[in-house]
Amino acid sequence: VNKDERKNERERIETKLERKLSLRPSPEELEQRNILRLKTQAELIAEKEEKKRFLIRKLSFRPKLREKKIIRFCDYIEVTEAEEIDRRGDKPWVRLTPRDKAAIRKELNEYKSTEMEIHPDSAKYTRFHPS
Image 1 (cartoon, rainbow, N blue to C red):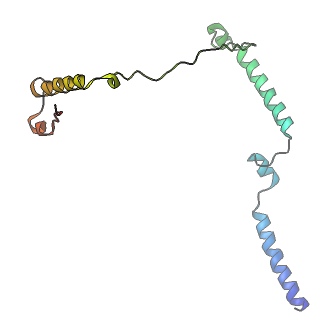
Image 2 (image 1 turned 60 degrees about the vertical axis):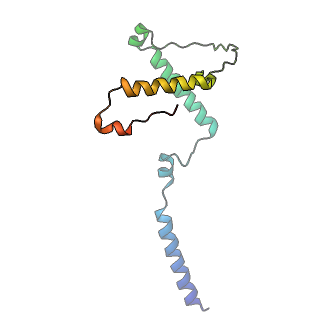
Image 3 (image 1 turned 45 degrees about the horizontal axis):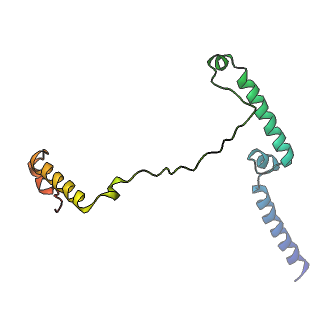
């Protein structure tokens, strides 16, 4: 490979790289998008805490909220022990005997056949439960 070919190859690669690098976002753009962080984690946490303190102070001095007592801050947290409670709903149909189920089916069929209003065209779709 002679020098001219090498030089041409280098220039071609250099042009390609320049094009690629020009498409990359600048550090400022990366910082704006919150991708590149120039601050340490400790600095970020301190800044967040400062913002939180400022906003809490600002909220607590709002006269309307003070009058209505909407926002109140407490310095203490109280945790109380509690018993474990079964929050599942009661399922009374599980306790039905076959005789109870048959009585319910009979009553439902009777209601459908005598009391329930059914349009004549949809009567064929009315389902009666087997006794």
